[in-house]
Image 1 (tube, rainbow, N blue to C red):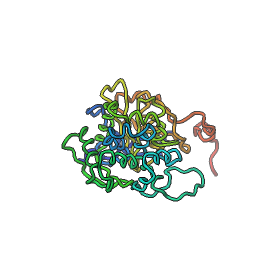
Image 2: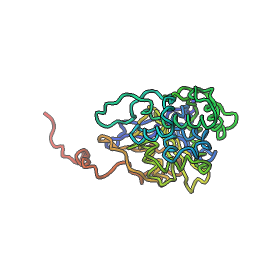
Image 3: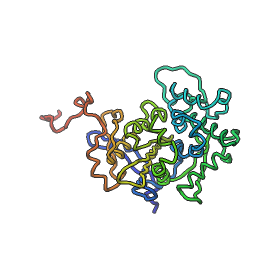
Image 4: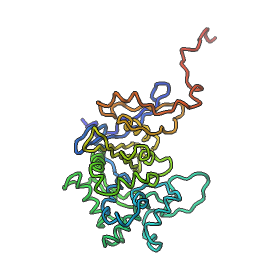
Length: 347
């Protein structure tokens, strides 16, 4: 029989008047230190995508420490929206003559408001800050900047070495693929990703990455982004990073987990910020963290699937309400069928 832990599992239900109309599937894993705390579909194989940027940039942590200011450090681990402030900081990392070395694909800003008319540019790509930082780091290390996006380059080999510090000296990715930004992305299970995020908390003081993300959360993602919202709301005790196609990594400082806590969420059907937001709302809520609710569903309410939460924390689920009571339409759409009179019969 196939291991259910390697299958996509239900994470959250969207219910209309108590009946589930839509169930969001995915996987979630909780790790403290090297100990697996909880797994619900955690052996599913996926790519780390942009959620791995804090680990990728560790390759250059020493060199970039004095070479970048705090804004530039934050944009180095970002998947930014492409707003004016994001582009300003990206451009500041490299000299004007070096910007042409950035090999991100031509793109429009990740989130646009109104009828904006723009030409695709490489710097609009959400990964341009990381690419600029990699180019800066390669120059400082004396590495060639030609071919920095290929898996034989020193950057990728040293990135694998950073991952092996946590997952073991003999660890190998089952698959290496080209990410949407052109850099290699490596495959691993959700549990392995959670181990890496637990390690971020354990080693937070070894470099500047944690502080940069919490100092400038809106540079990490941007307006109305889930990771930026979590970073702003959790008072420096949580770093959050989204990854393409439904990933969210959480590295958490919590008194009940002295060896750090890493939680990784993967939504099966891809990037769905609202679904990820509901799952994160419950996940962080049972740990005592609070942040604003997502925008409401149409006539539905979201409820976590209890198996997504460790058993010892499930009693706290009932205290979390991921919607707002002030919704002015709430009385227009809710009714109890049996409260209405049903006299007579149809002819």
